[in-house]
Image (cartoon, rainbow, N blue to C red; front, top):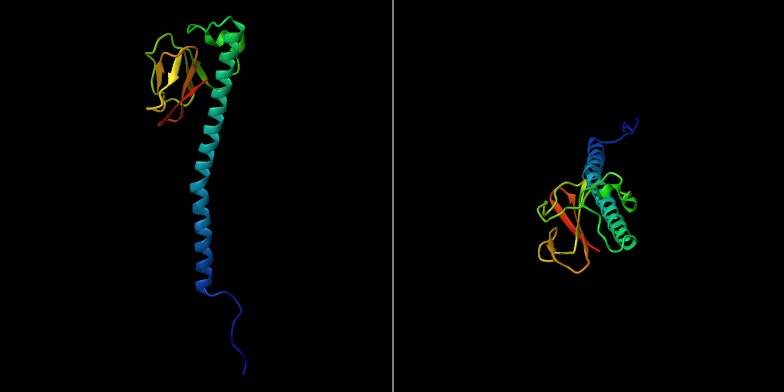
Length: 144
């Protein structure tokens, strides 16, 4: 009499492997957008740091003068903006907090509001403040 035991996988083993593969795919689809968002936020933070440094350098090279609100992008020391629209408002009537991820608002003589993240307080001896958004719902303030 022959042993009739067939070689192969049982249906339980196949379902188990499919379940593990499904879990791995689901984790990849949930983690990938978070990683992309994290990278975009880090790039925005680096852009804002470079913009603040350029404004500070501009002020040092121009006897303490701050770029004007009429043409901040024509100043030679401020051409590092890449894909960011940089605004130097003449007054505090601009958005506070910022919701557009491609806009950066630069304020002179201001301080970041520690009680309300993403907002600024007018007044500050010679501080420069940048308001920007990481995500449409997350507004940030960075002070130089």
